[in-house]
Length: 178
Image (cartoon, rainbow, N blue to C red; front, side, top):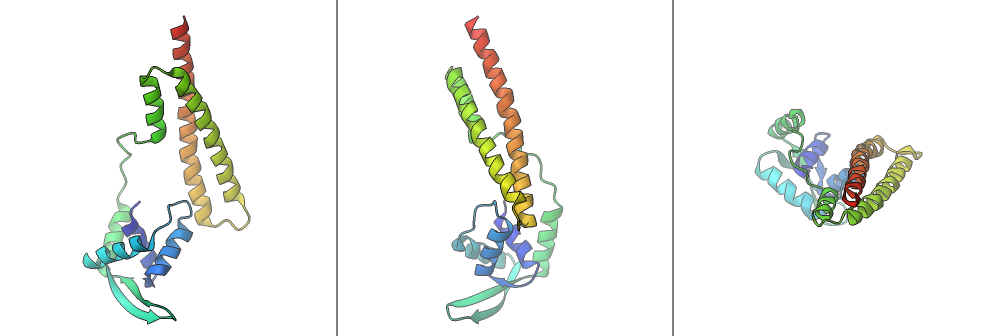
């Protein structure tokens, strides 16, 4: 995820200060890792340096000064370009799940790989139940539903792979015992 682009997208609706941006990010991307305040302000600093945002106002509401930032025309063009760029499918498998299974198989430990696959399948099914409950809960926002659907799609793909790999490992074990 590009934090800079998400912040630009949030600023497209109008000026905001860092605290508002952090809160909006965490609310609108409910399944994403929450942003740290330091990350918000460091990113805003880079966006300002690059000419994508400018300080629009400062206010003090019973606490420290709060600087609001606004999207510049260049920032809007940059955001539009990012939004229209199609992401290439990931060329490499980068998953802890995949790595653990392969390492267990490389260690000639099909039983360990099978046990891990079964346990991981169970964990995936539990997470899918949680997400389904969250997206159908009364008051679930569109962001909650879209995030749950995204996660469920990835979990479903993982489950297909887990099931296929479980069958392959079982076939391997049959070959070894012949």
